[in-house]
Image (cartoon, rainbow, N blue to C red):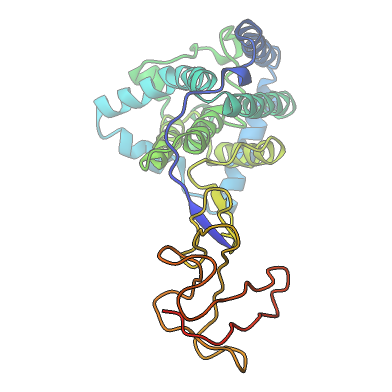
Length: 334
C-alpha cells in the first residue's frame, strides 16, 4: 500500500457550493450591526471596567508576562513608526477581514462557509464577554504608565471621553478581536491556498499583536484569551483540509491487469486467448518443473503462438489456485 502526495493545480471554484450572495450579504451585515449595537449597549460600567483593569494588570505581573510598555517604548522611538502603528490599528482590522471573506466566497466557497461560521461564533462569544467583563484598556490605566498613542499622535478611532463615546465601547478590551480576526484570516488563507509562501500570512496576526499592545489598546491577556476562544471555535467548525497536504491513496496494481489506470506488470503480457502469465522465482520451481532460460518467464508472448513452439508445448496453470502450479511439460522453450 503506497501513498503519494499530490500537487494539485488551481481549479475553478465550484459555484454550486456558494451560498446565495444576497443572503450572505444580509447575514454578515446583520451580524456586524448586532455586534456594534451590542458593544454600545455594554458601554458604561466605568468603575467596574477600571477595577477589572487593575486585576488584569496585577495578574499579568504575577504571571511574569512582559510589560506592554516594552513594546510601546520601541514604537515611540520614531514618530512615523507610531503613526503607522495607529493607522494599522484603525484602518486594517475591518477591511482585511472583509476582503478575506469576499475572496473565500468567490474562490473557495467550501472554505468560506466554515470560516464565516468560525468568525461569527468568535464574535458572538466576544460580545458576551464584553457584557460580563467590562475592561478598561491599558492606555487608561494610571498604574500602567502608558501613552494613548492615538490621541497623542493620531489617527484614532476613539473619542476623548470614553464614558460618553457613542461610536465605540472603549471598555471592551477583553478579548481582542483585532488579534482574533487577524489569526483567523491567516489560518483561513493558509488552509485555502496552495502557495509555498502561504505561511507568510502569519505576519498579519503577529504585526497586529505588536500594534494593539504597542498602542496600549490591549493587554497581553486579551490576545491570549481570544486565542483560546478561537481554538474552541475552530474545533467546533473544522475547516476543510488543505488540498496540498491531503494524501492521495494509490491503488495497488493487480497481477492480472491494471486497476485504476495502474500500468500492467511486464510479466503479464497480453497474448491471444488461452495465453497465460506465470512468474516463478529462480530456484523455487517445484520438483520436476523445468525452468525456462530467458529474460521473461511469459509463455505465449509475441514471437510464438499460444500452442507452443517447435519441440514443446505448455499447459496453462490454474489461475484460481495461487498455491499450486501445473509444471510445464518436458521440452525446451526457445
